[in-house]
Amino acid sequence: MSAIEKKVIATAKVAIDIINELAGEHKGTEHASKALAAIEVIASALRAGFARGMSPDDVAKAIVAAREEMAATTATIADNNAIIDAEGNAKFPPGE
Amino acid sequence: MTIRPVIPGLYALLALFASCMLVFGVTSCGPSQRQKTLYTSLVAVNAARDGFTTWDIQHQRDIIAKATSREEKDANIGAYREKQGKIVLGLLAVYNAIALAGTSTDEASLKSAVEQAKDLISAITKLRGGP
Picture 1 (cartoon, one colour):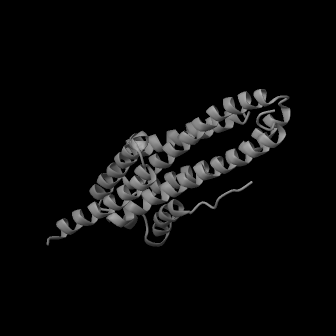
Picture 2: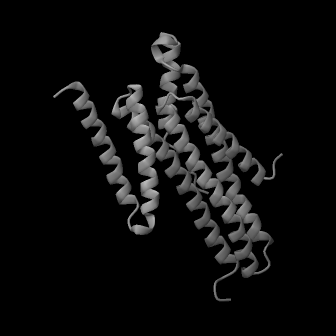
């Protein structure tokens, strides 16, 4: 197997891993557009990184790191909203 | 309030380029200025994000404190969360743009990431009542 073939296969494996992870996160057709948009970003990054000569692992690290920042952001906001909903319900109990 | 730890993977990747430049010089490390620019944008966005999430919960508490009925509380919290949602979507877009620019060499992706970061920081400042 040539070096370029090995690179292509390694890149594809990284993309498949990330897409599988996304499929687990975005179940149901209502979330299909989110998964597709994320896959487009991943594909663009892989293409760009590959063209620049980065290893698939380095490209994947950049994408995964960004997704971790994004996950931390949405998780913190979800936590905030859950706390506020509980405090709001305590002050104004539902049904009263 | 719970602030989840942010895994500093992007910092590590971008810092790697910066430290590489210090040790080996510019030519052996590729576009170091680009990485420094992206690193600066990422640090600024993360600082704005952390400030926003801290302010966010206090702001929502203030809305509840001022409300005199459940209906008023629901309406005001709902209106605020529309603005909150736009900021969160903006943050996600900026992180994507920085990751893309970090793997690219073109001027357009760098400019886009930096401008998106600036716009988002301005939007957060405006929402928080800043200048």
